[in-house]
Image (cartoon, rainbow, N blue to C red; front, side, top):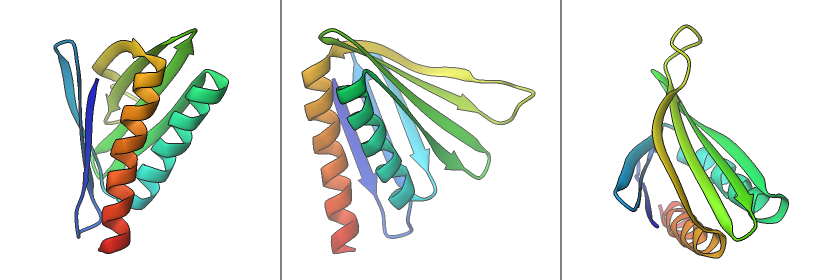
Length: 118
């Protein structure tokens, strides 16, 4: 699994995730809360077996969902522009749970480091 999280000086975060041909780009307008919510969701999934968080944009929301079953982590990312349209699938993958934890933690750490420097 490959994940990059890029924070910028305007307080936004852009995430790119890819695994076995599936790929998605995810954005949030408030990088500080988005990164913290993602960090907590990853920790919850790694420890308790499931985690979720929302990344907010002016025109809609991304929803990250994680579920661990044994040594496998299932990752789902959904997008919604409102209650009438519901949730649209953007990304789905399964990977090794330890690889997930390590990859996500490294991506989160790189964005948190940028925020501290900015």
